[in-house]
Image 1 (cartoon, rainbow, N blue to C red):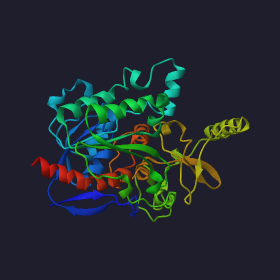
Image 2: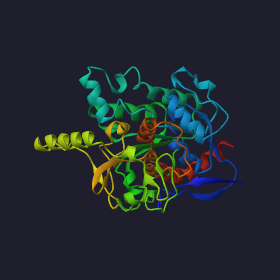
Image 3: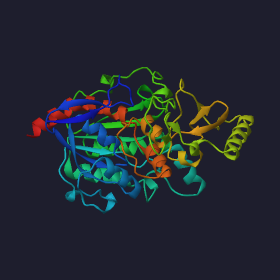
Image 4: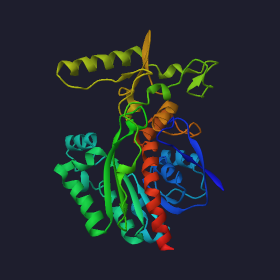
Length: 363
């Protein structure tokens, strides 16, 4: 008998409760895995990961540090034949969102480059999901992407995705945009796509969602008063004070204030986000390493500071024992690209009975 981590909706998102579960119930594969956020969700309902694909070598390092399977993480999924992937019951994929995100589309338009399904480097990765689904016909899948996926290219991108999954492959699909603010002190809306090979009564309405905003930044910020043991290299000393390097320099703080004032004068909403213990925050993005402007922590009498990577882990719902073996820059990118773990743990919870039925039927 083994113990799995389960992030419950009513739990402190920084504390992972332990739940005793029996032997492995089903097998899943983890595509575009990042640092394994979707994997943690499926392991919380007693799934076993049998295949992982992630191309970024730094994300691979973090993944290996936290999930020591003694098997390699496959890099480019486009180079893997579907028949070489192990049989599985559930397919997970946080397929790359850059071609569909508002920021990504704007950047590609400015560069005169294609995006969405016309993007030859990333947009087509969705079709790798399709070819694997077509070959293995798993009982279920769980996909994640940015909210803007549904409105990209005036809805045509989503029409293609829906048609391929439902009409071409015959899956019964369910979609919902879920805000991590139900679980964490972070506004982070993502589209969740759940599919089942056989029709069932799965419904997102069965999720247990706390009112938005109940969890505050105090749950993730270093208290800096000795109540927390030092978390090197992010904090040090008897009071576990945050390292000085996370406080903005006078030059950067001045730049951000001037930048915000300039856009405010033009009627734009661009600027930094300043938070304290009683607040919630904006979406943590992969660009956070640049200046931290979307989430700055106020420090009375001093310039504000960036979140530490450990605080970023907490704000995404990762437990305290989650290892961060990479540089701050890479850690910020990884957590900014990650899923909010408690959201998908809850989705996995309501998927579980339907996966159980499908696995039993398959014998």
